Image 1 (cartoon, helix red, strand yellow):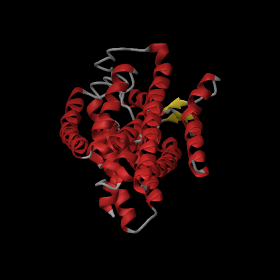
Image 2 (tube, each protein chain N blue to C red; image 1 turned 45 degrees about the vertical axis):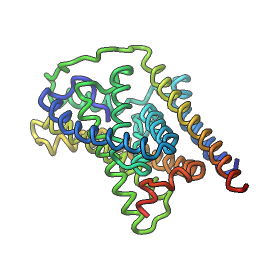
Image 3 (cartoon, rainbow over the protein chains, first blue to last red; image 1 turned 180 degrees about the vertical axis):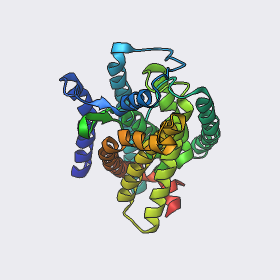
Image 4 (cartoon, chains in turn brown, purple; image 1 turned 30 degrees about the vertical axis):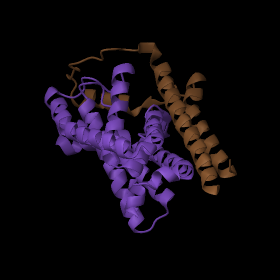
Length: 98
Length: 222
């Protein structure tokens, strides 16, 4: 693996892991999600508005874990595809050399 | 950019669903075709799908005490064309609506429209334009993904403004308010998304060039 590829992979891993690490150590507490801010803005523009449908499944406290799970599944599939592509390229190179 | 469950009036929820459906269906046909005609591209498709899966779960801290997430649809739009990303993006949004209570079923149409239709098409357009002016392929992909990210959030702001016009300023006044919520925190995140997209593009071009060189959008665009 070339140096540049290694650096890219390390940067990706750090970025992907950072929100969960920050969350774990309570460093995300001061940050409010923009989706929630938009919701609050709706409340200010039309104070009487009530959502007319509720989530079928409410994960409650477990939401953060489910977000982490989504990222982990994504990283797993992504790594699998990359590793397979890499292996395929190698065998491709070899057959071309023969 | 996820409009929460039940937070769009019924007429708007139905309207955006009707607007999004044909794009997703057309994308489904294109995706099917892509997999049948170019089975070797499945791994790249998987990587592009996984990328948007990861990025849309990534709640990153941004300026002014707010946090938000990138969309990750630019990469796939540049590699496989916007219709394919309409399907992959819709799948991600459905997953989040059902399992994470993030977004919702009634707002799925509107969220698909902003993240899986406007975002990919904008990214694709910007990419083609930059390539026409012979920009470097990674720079073009990065800038395209960043602008695609911003276009998604602008769309969400407009959708909310149409549903909740400001009593004094009307739809425009309301749009300015919602834009104010998203814009400042999203600009740094769009830059991050652009940089990540350029880096992943570099990896995929390295490892998957044989698969790409078949008939991908990138090659056709050149």
